[in-house]
Length: 314
Image 1 (cartoon, rainbow, N blue to C red):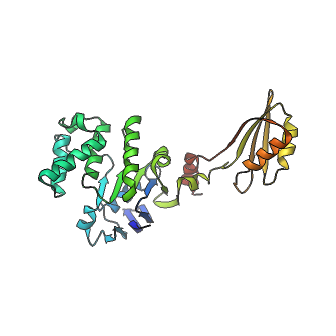
Image 2: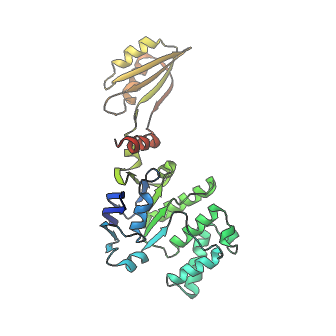
Image 3: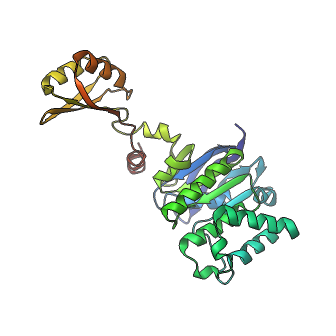
């Protein structure tokens, strides 16, 4: 996979405080990287360094092969950035603002109009185009910020909390847009909304106290959750102790928790290696002739993993 974003040992100090400490990761073409962390973890500081708005005290950034420190203009031509809060000019209309951004980006005439029309359609700004930006809702301001970030069709997108302030329908639209754009771009999406990672990200990096503490696909991170791949089984018309004895003898089973409720037996079954034993449990239930009301496998929750990693560094 072609590396589009290369971050090496980024470090930033604010007086005695180390906000970002030796952060390194890469993002390839076609990847949507979720950059996660609790408030104050260093997410926005890292994004500002990656986009050239803040100079690191150490480390380097390369965007599509160009070094940010050596070739800042070349890098910024290939980069789209939606900063935290999407600062805008309050007395400008969205149309005026996008026209201004298009001019800065070097577009004019028919091409400028075409670029503006395209992003207005993509983020659904038609109804507020000529309204002063200061009168817009937080959600519409966010969409104006997203429009300016993608106006020049950059190869790399850095999006800091892109769905902040959006209602559920707007969040869905923006997530679909991110997925649509991802095929030929590298996208870094800084967020504290874990459902966003599940919805659009192919990989996630978690930062805590300025340092990377986890890096993997959402599925890999979920596998670190307590109870990952545990089997939940409900059986009707059986005796709890008989069920426990049978399941204790199933290959791969490490622990069986059994409770009896009226005519049903509820079981949670796991092994110490985190591998699902659902197949073996299903075979055992069939062999015993049990009436299985439910059999499901626990995938693990990303929010549980996030809390454990950022609170304990596990």
